[in-house]
Length: 137
Image 1: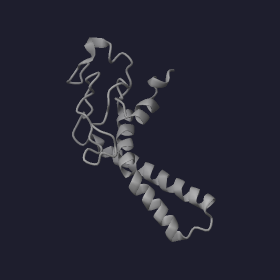
Image 2: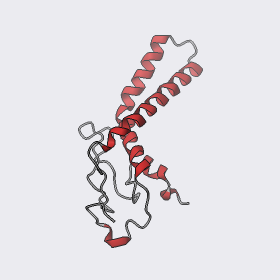
Image 3: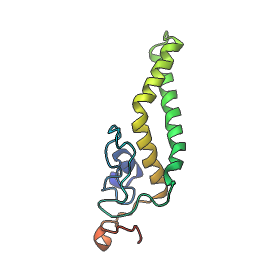
Image 4: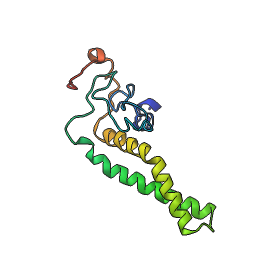
């Protein structure tokens, strides 16, 4: 299996879950004006990303898991690297990590959620010219 065929490729590269070629987001996560804005459809294969209203509400659960994982990671890292750090310093380290990472965690949760429901199709770009705006096959 090639790296481009994996779900991880789509998630880490913020690529279309169907074809792994087109961009999933309008802009990068730290463009705060467009944070989390998803294209209506893929610019390469034409598949729709917004399949129903409220589809991405489920990404809140993924975002919660990412936030908890980040908090635990910072807590363990601070406990190991800085054993004399006060509880106030630990809280500041955790909160600053969550604040700085929030736009990235938000975008990451949306692309993970999409990859759970949209399956990769290596023939998406080859069949029918690749420009299917309505998302039907």
